[in-house]
Amino acid sequence: MSPPHEVGAPDQYGLVGHPVAHSWSPFIHGMFAKAAAQNLIYRLFDIPPDDFRRETLRLMTGGIRGLNVTLPHKQAAAELVNELTPRAARAGAVNTIAFFENTTLLGDNTDGVGLIADLERNLGIDLADKRVLILGAGGAARGAVGPLLERELRSLTVANRTPFKARKLAAEFADMGPIAGCTFADVAGPPFDLIVNATSASLQGEMPALPDDLVSESTICYDMAYGRGDTPFTRWAASRHARRTSKGWGMLVEQAAESFLLWRGIRPGTEPVLAALAQIE
Ligand code: ATR
Image (cartoon, rainbow, N blue to C red; front, side, top):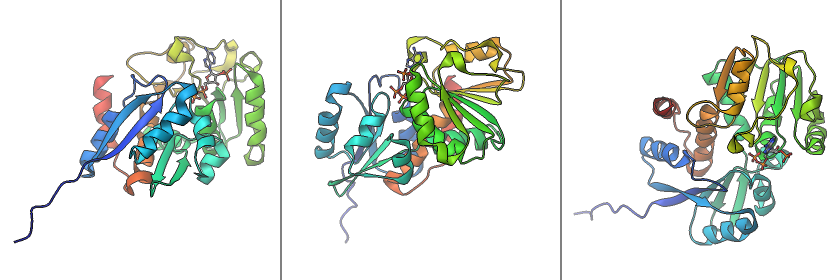
């Protein structure tokens, strides 16, 4: 008689950020794991910037198999890992770390593909030849710029509170397409086809001060931030009669599915998770 099948301890994954308490990632990865019959747990680790390197290495030596990384650590994570995927190297920002053989830390960036999947597949937006404005030049914006430019945009404007960072980001990606960086006040119309908020201003309940003529009734406004109800950005967009506003739930779920693929070799279906999250809106 063969011995009963033993179920081992679950593989451990998690999210490092500061703050992380608002995160839906444990719920999302929990649904993925159940659907894909994967024995894993996913926890939240609130780690302030000064402790990021030490605590992340401690988690790794403690047996964690993979981590998602959120603000403000995405660029520090790119410095920490031993290897970068080409898209993470290009972005200079990492939102997913896989620990292979407990010795190699591979850094990836699934934010951009997650955003594109949500825009194209879930929202039905055709990006080709569109004028796009992205607000912010931090880790989240860095992940999005390359995949957006791959879609043959007419132009991509990066606007940031600290204009130097927007110009630097634009210069880094200038070989990929028409991209320019500026400060918020210097963004020039005519109205954009798509405006993406990649700042963390919403976390402070703020909305960057932008010129008035950037939104028309055909503009789509996408906030990478998510949560129940309106954000300062979606309120701003609605007050200017944007065609459509969307929050970052879909991007969150799609980037999580890409992380899951890197860790487990399976890309879980995202529809059931999107449907579950739509219930809590
Ligand atoms: P993330 O990983 O979410 O991009 P980050 O790397 O800390 O986090 O970047 C945060 C982004 O939000 C930056 O572009 C930041 O602008 P600065 O480069 O000038 O710091 C932007 N940001 C944060 N708070 C903001 C606010 N209140 N108004 C406008 N922009 C803000």
